[in-house]
Length: 231
Ligand SMILES: Nc1ncnc2c1ncn2[C@@H]1O[C@H](COP(=O)(O)OP(=O)(O)OP(=O)(O)O)[C@@H](O)[C@H]1O
Ligand SMILES: [Mg+2]
Image 1 (cartoon, rainbow, N blue to C red):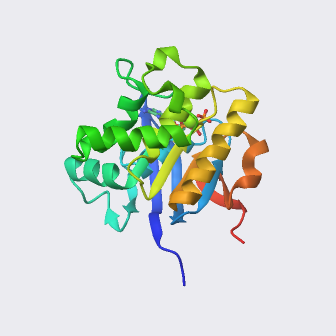
Image 2 (image 1 turned 90 degrees about the horizontal axis):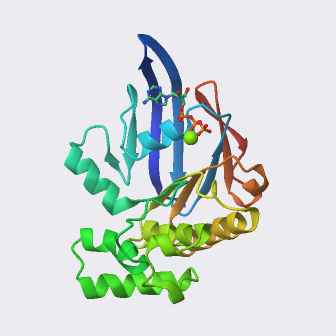
């Protein structure tokens, strides 16, 4: 039985206008990821990896092409619909954690649940359980400013996964971490996404981590091509 496709992008083209000059970055990208699959996207700086991830997330739109998430067409949806599709199906981890500074670890992780209308008490319970799982059970009430870089990223991982999204998109999630913390964070993301059957798309520069992915794709000259195919 073939696995359910959770994100499919077809024929993605994107140019940016800069000083009256058109810079073509994406020249027909096709990509799909199935439930629970773990895919890395690599490529030179400036090749368009972050731009592509923004388009997958519906945070930016393609000039041509389509993106479907959990069977819903992001391009055809209005902004509020897109936000709902994102909220219900996607999680994000960025290079910098983007936690809310004035909220504790447990409140940050509870936030996506609250936005889905779950009660404060239940959201906090789910958040605390997941923080426990990522080894942050002893730091529930800490503000982000009182956590180390690696700890913040673990909280960010918990926040990305708390709503059990069908796909998590991450852009250089280990970029600000030392080697050991980076390895630990990536293993954690990988283990959690396997456990929840969450697809996991990670943009990374770190070639030493590619082994653990089911597939590796390289973005170069505007197109994606596989450098490690699915078995
Ligand atoms: N809003 C924008 N306006 C103009 N040009 C942009 C914009 N966003 C990105 N670009 C250009 O598009 C190209 C791709 O940028 P992008 O950030 O996607 O690259 P990247 O592959 O993520 O690079 P890195 O590995 O350095 O993070 C770059 O040349 C960049 O200057
Ligand atoms: Mg980038």
